[in-house]
Amino acid sequence: MTILRVALDDRSYDVHIGRFGAGSVAERLAEALGEPSGVAVLADEHVAEVSPHVSPLLAALAARLPRVHLCRLPRGESAKNLAAVERTCQWMAEQGYDRGSAVLGLGGGAATDHAGFAAAIYQRGIAFALCPTTVLAAVDASVGGKTGVDIPAGKNLVGAFHQPRVVVAELGFLDTLPARERAAGMAEVVKAGLIADADLFTRLEANAAAVLGPEQLPAAIAAAVRVKIGVVSEDERERGRRAILNFGHTLGHALEAASGYELLHGEAVSLGMIAALALGEARGITQAGLAARARGLLAKLSLPVDVKAHVRPEVVDRIEVDKKRRSDRVRFVFVPRPGEALLADIPLPELKQQIVAAI
Image 1 (cartoon, helix red, strand yellow):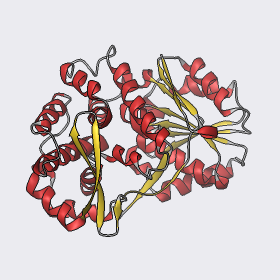
Image 2 (spheres, rainbow, N blue to C red):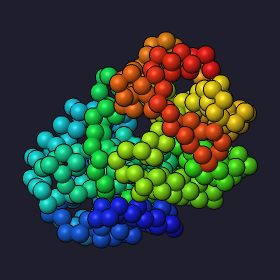
Image 3 (tube, rainbow, N blue to C red):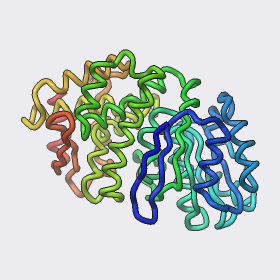
Image 4 (cartoon, rainbow, N blue to C red):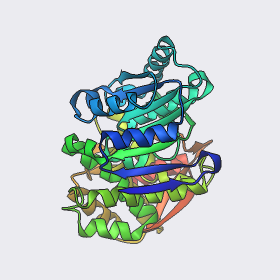
């Protein structure tokens, strides 16, 4: 079991990582939420259907907190849109949840983003907690207070900063996670190593075959969360350093949206990181050979690495609506060497041209 503190003054909270059991998870949630007037559990419908951990957790919560009701969210990315959030808010109103209520988000990154955004805007903001059920959600989406949804123009263009009261990553949920989902989450772990933890990147290279196993995965998740906490604690609202967490996401988000979300987020980020490293090498910023090292590691983790097969002109054009764009420039993240990240504002036409040339 690992407990990590996100230090944000009066918005500080803990991230619990381990195998706890329903009673212990409920106890940690109840302690952090205090005395809410009710708890709306917003759960990915697939998780609610297949996971053996959901019913015991709901029962344990209901024994400790009032008016615990389950709302099933559309599966995966189908939950990340304004229409889905509106339906959730309407359901919460019909259930009589007031400003003293709280939300519990249960699911992968899409469900936790949905739950956090709904909590941020319902009654002008209510408390929430998160139980991530995927590797991706545990290491990235559930930590840091970024909440939001997609619109047709692009990924995460509508959202709010709203910190949870607690994050409890019950790793038992990962036991029923499909292999593809498990692998996709590792892209964000690799990202953490590349941008801020060279030792983590080296360990992943040395143990790629075993890192997804039950013995090594908890430590890998905890290491990635430590990286994110360090960055978020320094720059909560992405006014500076927090932007390094977007490494691989500029092209990654474009690839994800262009695929109609057939590419999982981690799969798109895998491709985006390789492209960013290749561009960095072409510009003389990134250590020669690092793109090949990352490609080899990501391939061993069963992530896609053939960037050329996925990048088309319409994909690159989608960078124009990326949320990191400022006027005619994009704040792009480079990795000169493992454990180090560099931000550079690049003119959009130049960036689009050079990405195509580099890959």
